[in-house]
Image 1 (cartoon, rainbow, N blue to C red):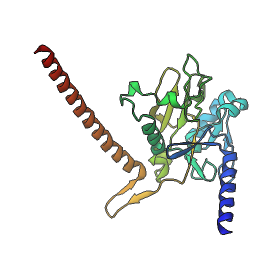
Image 2: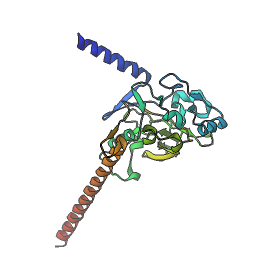
Image 3: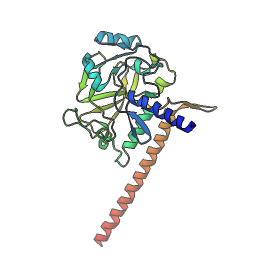
Image 4: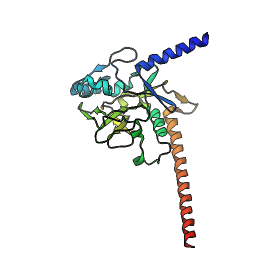
Length: 276
């Protein structure tokens, strides 16, 4: 009876959140299939709705969380989601619904690494963007294949001066980082990580962006990262992951170099045989 109750509770719990944020499973991760479109924090506090350029700038200068819709048209919210400023994305009251969180650098890096399995590791040959972008709505034949149900749409973004740009051809998504997780002053956060998708690019881009910019938010299911420490140092999960990723990249580079040397030796031997 206890097992039946637990199963019912689990299914009800997951169903409740699935109704709020429909999800797709990609390898070990569970991602929302749409950008966030909410008007209040998890505790019920409202987020300021901004339309004018002056108000957008005012919110940044005063550290006020704010959101808007592209071209101030709520109909765009139903398609692309809401555009949030950095202070809304990073607010400790939590922008994501219970059970979810704003995807961070580790999440995107893990996803990117999974998408590039078996692909040449040169950036100009990456096709992670094609795998995630929707198969419609992108200008200049820039649509993707949407292989995993992420359905990344070209919702554009809001610029530093409050103007809108890029709908149909690009989209920016906030990525939470160590600054927004681990207690640094908001005044120190002049830039933050963002993920870019563009019509003319097959790959997805990781960039540091000015915090005055307005981007969309994609959530992932799971708890917030924790700080891992020992007696001498404190490392965040992000820093640990970056260290491991760097080691893995070095190993891959060495392996590629060894394979290239073997291939070169093989060609030389074959050429010598043909000459003989």
